Length: 133
Image 1 (cartoon, rainbow, N blue to C red):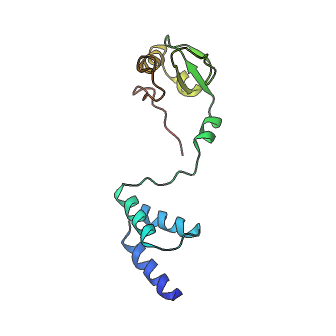
Image 2: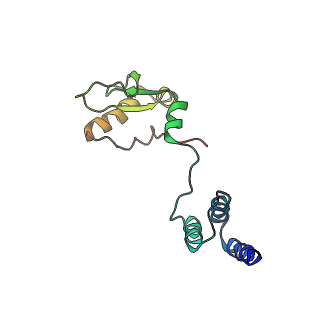
Image 3: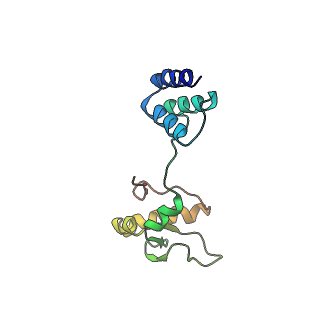
């Protein structure tokens, strides 16, 4: 029975793309038993319908970087998360990213967020922050 399971695993993983095969093998190594659900998720990874899991948490990402608050004039006004209640929301960026932008670019991204008056507003093109692996 074990031999049959191994043969079926090999046949399945042969037909998967590289990412799907890696996902399948990682899940198996973590103790998940082979199943139609696991195979289906591996196929979804191949088709791009399901993102691969990221090993890094958002909390760790915020701890690695020194995040600062940007006001609508483009000034760096202190650490992120220290804004007083009642004020319009301001933009937070990693210090390195904030320093790489001009004052006008920092102001543009902060004004965009303040104008929307929402918690989640996408950055401007210049101010996009990407996670380095």
